[in-house]
Image (cartoon, rainbow, N blue to C red; front, top):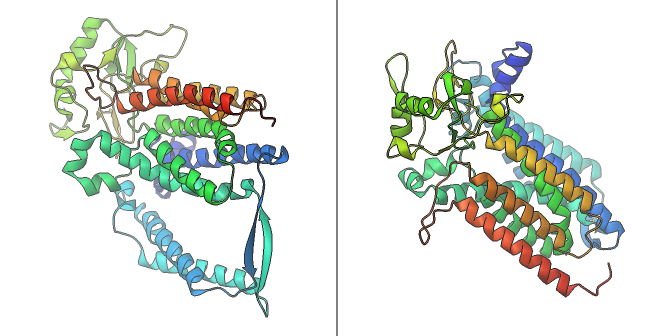
Length: 443
């Protein structure tokens, strides 16, 4: 596992540059997911524009104005925040033992760094406006195509996606939230995909309607982009080891920390007993004798520890079916031997690497969506197919994932299972409705 870029570069090239500790691998892949999905969304919007399905909108702008106080203030504020936190984190990264993740979300920072970056951005904005300044500002009418607004759409998806992901995660883990509401809201961990998807979708649809973009054609164009974005985001989960793994695979045990081997049911049960404090209390006793809390996942008894037994073919790597996530970013598990500093833990028992399965399955589903996109001509149907695919994929993966469950009429579904089932039903209903409504319409 590579919690941040420092560990990746150290492992690959032997470089030990503390400054790279501020670049967390999960965040890097989330950013890549947004960039790549924006690329595919732009391609699809341009294709629909050429077909005449999406049209531009004329807007009046004023050119030649000098930089306003608001322009300079916003640039300065953004520059100060980035300089205050990032330069401060860069400086702090030189010191061993500093938790940069906590530092980023704290009130600490570099005032000098903030002022310098703010001054640079203010100057750049002033210079840009000064070059364009006219003796008399002019009103101009310009055409803005839907694909020109992809940058705005991505910003809406990022901001409201994070807000929704945090809110749904805290709803799902209400007991944890009420113990520390502020800490859980500001924590960099704990994100629920469906919460982000729902809130981001609502925000983008409101924006698109305001800008006169055809909603059905927009969501159809977004379907492949959403699928590939999710697959890339799951790479971040897998590489960082952020806790989005599955239940324990009882066909294997961890013979030494960080290593998995095939095992019998009796050997699995014995390992549960050896690490009973982890499974029952969420704590481990380190070699020094200190008791450390490492996870909030624990059970009332060992027989309730979630697990399934599946032994993969011998010609495939064990980690495809059973993985202990050594050096995971959550610092969950028992200590690894001969490891110093942070991120020196691995799960005491191997789990199903569910992020890996979602990377593969959603990558494959993206290829299917991309291949059929030109054949689906009824508006809205493409997005409905995405909902069905996404819902089925997530529902199946939930059968081997660890999540909070709800009690409804004697059954115990997870939040994701409820939402994914609703998405499948909505997708099927949507295909029926859209086909009926646009049956005799030519596109």
